[in-house]
Length: 146
Image (tube, rainbow, N blue to C red):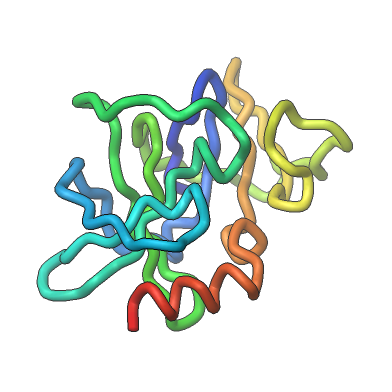
């Protein structure tokens, strides 16, 4: 799992869904997109839509700093960049450590959560990237890319 941070929480997504982790680069705004769709980047010749996960989860937007990263995730045939506060590490999480998501998790919609894992003193929220982007939003991503 790739572990990343938003505000004071740590989240994790499967490494198999991640193409790369990039530093901040210029983002080209795209008019008439959802507020959390920041625009697109050209990454090695591929145009990739960029989503600010803070805004997607209803958190306050922050400025870019040295720790911020863009995680390039692959969902079905779509590549999308996810702006996160920091990409912390890559860890193995055994299935025994994963518990179902509690009904209430801070500011993140429980529908986006696959489960939680407690590792030592850390509590990791495991995200379901497919649910983070609804089918309507995936269509909007195709419009942004195309």
